[in-house]
Image (cartoon, rainbow, N blue to C red; front, side, top):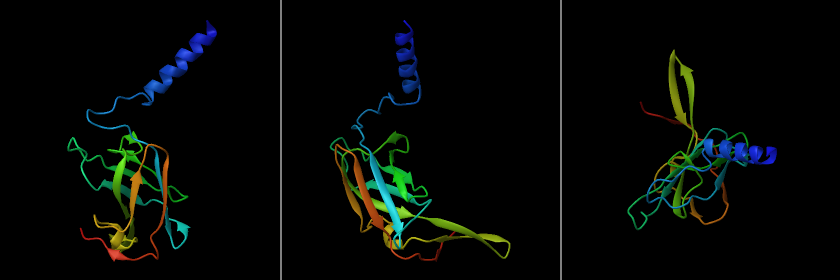
Length: 149
């Protein structure tokens, strides 16, 4: 009986943590995607990564995925910011990092990733397949582009 109790308790914990959460109607199963972002060969920490679908699915939906890089430059994506991974398909990879500095008593923001990576026509893409997916991107040298209010 103790063995069954432990198994039931573990299963309950997994379900409560969202592992068994139902996907929204029309959303295909997402698969793990990790994007490693480097800047001049070094990990870029605290950058935003967005996977924007190139085309809508047959049902008309576009399931984007987002992530934020850790100290190793790795971003594990989540579809709609909630479901681990991304649904299979073709994506543009958008990368952005804004840093803030105090100047003359006011905070000013600067984009430190080249603007070619921040828009919909970014040079980077990924095909997400029904497996673990990984891509490494080096965004080159840091830039300093003021961010408008």
